Length: 199
Length: 361
Image (cartoon, rainbow over all chains, first blue to last red; front, top):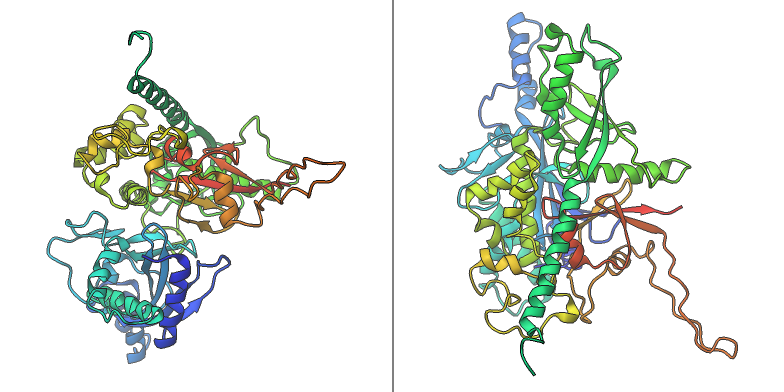
């Protein structure tokens, strides 16, 4: 469990060690968050508007399709945020995925990118707005208001985070100083998120 | 002395609880029955061809505890019957419809209508030179767009199903904030959980609260009368010691860990902080305590009284400066209101106490 101050401290020491993460501050103290951007590829040829247009151009012989055009239509841009979740007093993983024209991807397309590590568990259900496994009381993944930005972002439900990371923290060297413990907490947590997402 | 003349301690406590139950129910019913006037107008640039212009405005007195996706079917029926030309309207897809306020604020699908309205009241009071009228509520003007929803700023799905899931998530989250676990929500049978949303859809107070009362504490057991060590089997013993679903009917608002509360600032961010119903010194946590802790500038702590002098041997602390007012369920709340009580009586249907902060001029 983290207070807002502890979360801010954890983010700062974590970002010092893992420099791809940058701290974004907010008007209110404790509402800042970590961010980084990554790119991923679509895994399969999903029928998208961009691909359909390229195919049309090919058929009409209008343009030469370069491999750059093709690569661009297969690329997706991911912004990842680590934000404090006040209800569960833990960090939460928020993300936004856009295609190369800047349009947000629907959930079924996000699942079909290299950002998702595994295929869905057999009994998972996915619709436009959430990914649910029956054993969970909350959906695994759904849209929610970003706690600082207010816009809708996808997020990993943090209800199990404290328990899951806590188990691993028991195995850690108990002689670590406070900053080192905070960094280890974040690293273990991202490893758990990494079971599902390529982070 | 005969026992017939003196009511026993347990009778007195039962009567006090009955009063608390009555008061809690009264305020819950008032919140439930609250409505706000909406004036919905299709963006004139988007009216399909051959629409009956001049009629495209729809007035509705909407329940505070309802949501925009639940109003869409009624609005659509009106527009299709009265305004739109049948052929031109064929291509309209209501999943692409979205609302914004007259001032350009995007209206979220998963915020209750009461919350959207109160936020709007506060934003407009900041912009206009006249103070808001307290005697009559002004219709909130909504612009209905029929296409191209701004997907970066609004949830991708505007369906009733998505709204229901967001609502259920909020209920579970509130459950967790109150008790540190979601046992009460998860312990409900599926038909009861669904019944909560059905109660919202059908606007049925009894159906909704029959289930919700298993989750929400009642405003009994004020701190001064709370026994320090409740006898075993007493109605006020710690939750979780016996069957949660019957136990929770008697859970006191003051035995919660934290009140699920969010602060909505004018044109600003939504703030969420821990709000225990009792402070460390044993006093009940009030709106003033909470706001002054988290929004120092708006509710500054009372300055100390001046030192006693010959002319003023018993100085009083000067009156506190109030730069802000708090709107809950459309009502301006006194700063002395206790968070525990508010969290039992003026809570939204999704379990959250939404407080909108306005600035006095």
